[in-house]
Image 1 (cartoon, rainbow, N blue to C red):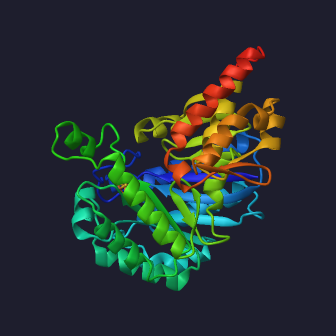
Image 2 (image 1 turned 90 degrees about the vertical axis):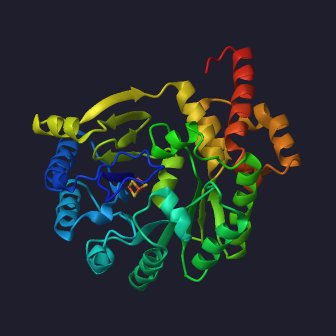
Length: 386
Ligand code: SF4
């Protein structure tokens, strides 16, 4: 089974915190869709591809595309892949991108999940983030999407400078008025190369402290779990049965292929990634080549590190599966550490493995390092190099 990710690299405006590859020159949409169609065809001719379980149209702002373009993309996926096992088809939509009139069309091409980039329901915060939409447009987007789709997800950001508990609570309370099935809540990151990063280094803005970040993280957890959501990854909450299948494929290290500039693919422990800029992307496609910038076969160490990191950040690590892949005995190797985590309230033993708690998720990176260090010692003693 395979996940398909399609990167649509166009936005109406660049947000202040965004380091995804996206441009605001919509004049290139037509050429892009033609190139994307070719890329999908090339890949299906050259790779032994599997049945597709999930499709994710992300970006950028996929909801910028007119229906005729989406039709071309979906037809070419349909021609190139076996979609008879498709269970989830998501499109990312941004309020302000005029997509509400296209919701019935989305349904007609097989979309069954809408992910809306709301980010905040406080006007000042939206302005700070450089979002193109207003609070009213965000609410209208949610309301209208829910009239067409049962499975609607919303993205929000927290730890925005000057944000306090009551602002965040207001956003969460407003969201609580809708029958959302999934909410992603990301702590704001100051990525190098973004406008926000420049403001940070020039001290124009002050980030929240780790203590403040933790308080807001806990507020989200408490409000959302009270409202019937389960946290199933550091930043992701879902009602029962509405976990994002596509994202679960990433975290479980299942196979996926990405199309479009900057998209990454991962098949059987081999990873490759496309050129980020449209210029090189177009050049390669026009030369009849896949627009691949780099590739790597994951080493034993990379596979082990990623399995631990992604497992701890999401559903946990299943001991039997881990031992089978890495010829270890993780439960015995890590037992003291796992017991310590459990005693500190950072993890729980499950029926078949170990899974972090909400507090554990907050320090998942630190716990990953602790476990890797522990494993390194033991494997070194056994003369197994990781
Ligand atoms: S809408 Fe999304 S992809 Fe586009 S600039 Fe803003 S954060 Fe980046």
